[in-house]
Length: 254
Image 1 (spheres, rainbow, N blue to C red):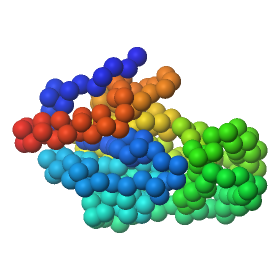
Image 2: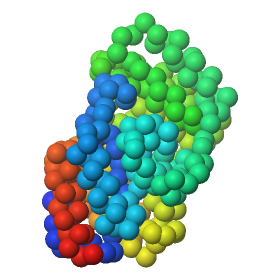
Image 3: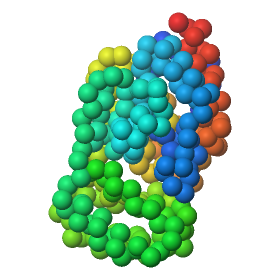
């Protein structure tokens, strides 16, 4: 059972580590991943929160780190990309990258050929993760899912398919947002803080479970089914409002 999250006024702004999904959480979904944009107000809000929380703010996303940097430039935050397969533990530190393996590249080539005449399907080759977006072609999703499951059987062990709001992804088994958040929690400035994680999709559930195990605050945006998150917010706009309140509380506490 989920409820509205605690007011930021109830939280200790000096003791929070904030982890944020991007698409569907900070930004509305769009038919094409490149259609999204970040306005200056959101960019400034995130920068202010990072400053007041002593840098303990990180993106935990299915996008790769390079895409996140382009989207939020000039703001750089610690980032776990590709569900934790890529990491940048500090804002300007080195990026641990995950390249596209040959077996996944072959699957991508075959699926792209199979659906090249289907309008509205977009293949996003993100290195070690392959995403197939069907938001602009919802009627095609069952066919895409069936083809993806057949392709999964041809891959070596170690991959899973994660179906989301409007598409699916081939993801290595070790790519989990729980592991990404746990890695951040082992280093400064995240260590010894109470984790707060906001996400919106199936891929965020492992992160919610981990945050719950650390007595943190897990928030799912617009939940449409059972969720491990203990709290919920109705939409992206309400996430922005909650974060604005958190910034004010953190500024008071610090």
